[in-house]
Length: 612
Image 1 (tube, rainbow, N blue to C red):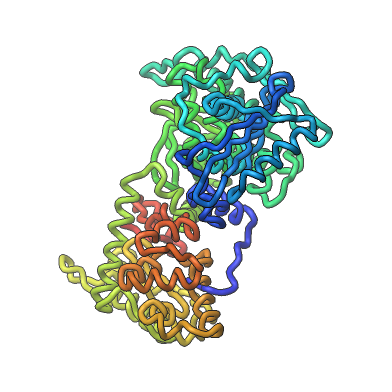
Image 2 (cartoon, rainbow, N blue to C red):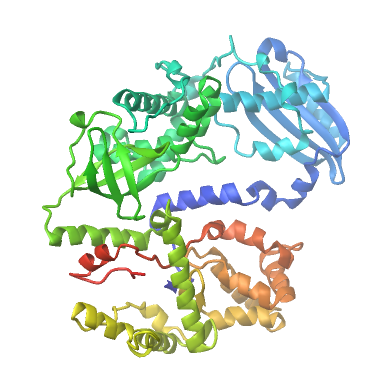
């Protein structure tokens, strides 16, 4: 795979936003990265200076609480705004490096605004703030983005000290709207939540029609909860992520809108990382039996795929997912007579979710055109194999054997690479490196002999298939071929990659003194290092290699380029977490295909991914 350093931009808004959300969940909060001293100031062990609350908070049902502590950088103050009738914790913000006169000014200003402040017991104030958080979570209300950062000023609080009786009216939120919030409405669920109470009992012959109807009703309650107008903002954010713009559902095609809605209800994650199944269980968990709760949370584990019908019963289908190569018993939550009919040998694109030891359809199931001929079946198999290669996470989901075989396959490739070149990296011009890569591929296919058969892979292919094997055409980018400095690296998980300006990148860490001093040199160093860090197609491997080879220099270079004075080599995970959080969830670059029959039929027209 070619890793290009310059001019790289995501072509889809969806990918950009998803990456941003992943980074938010896994990296240090941005506000603390921008201002490291703030993190030191926001500590609850600093001595308390004062705790203040607006005098009339009980009458207003609105509490503004100021927590002030004495930090080494001066007074640090955090303000929490809590709506006790509806939203819970509605906002939080703060500042540090303050003086006592700054606090006196805030008190004076509050009197001028007819909102005087009074001293408050810290434990009681903390119970209101923590209560505001728990109230918002209970009702699925979006919390302020950085609220957890500001909560660092509060002592940990025992859950028994949180009194939710302070919140709401008759135990429920009363949303107080202004003109700007008129689309953020609360709508009581119009479903009977008693359906959540009873355990789900499945007999040895599988679920009954009545049980499937109930599962469908529970899914409907979750959909109703997730599409409550209260979550209007989340709904529009999700539409933008899914389609690149906030389209109205009625403007989407039926199957597209159904797939979006199912993804939103089951898989979409808020900026804080939670999903609607989690919110639903949190809001109504006290009504649910344990297995209903487990089933709803299990619905987050959606399996997406192309399915081949292998068998058909009175209420369900025995199907094979051609993407992860697992077989499932799948039931519709409406009767087969009322749903789109599928027969043995048919193919469908569908989403399924787990329920005990079987699955149910979720969202839209689309029948794929196929007349049953080998040619059309081969077309579908090739499509499935391409999806496996392009989206390996889908291929490995729910199939540990496939993941294990793929890791063994790419490890074998790595050992072959190192055995052939004597190292896991090679440096040269673009054309030189590409030529060596082609020589390596020819060696693997035409020269290396199997010790048991004495045949090369090409000879074995000709004997079994009756055809002459031809190396697949690799379209190396012209920009790579023209590069004077290219590295070809092989990793036991990522496989072979090509990196531009690799020798310069390595030399910056090997000999930093030669590349520092003067604004021209610094600009070049920053261009190279930041280019590697910010590239979406370069993984963490180059940086981990340099940290291992040149630990002291690695720290110096990162400090120099990023102005990160406290950085040390043992903080490399923090660096990677900030710039490349997705690399903590890597999967093998090559996908092993377990079904040899599927591969052979697909190859009857053209080549496909590798078979184990």
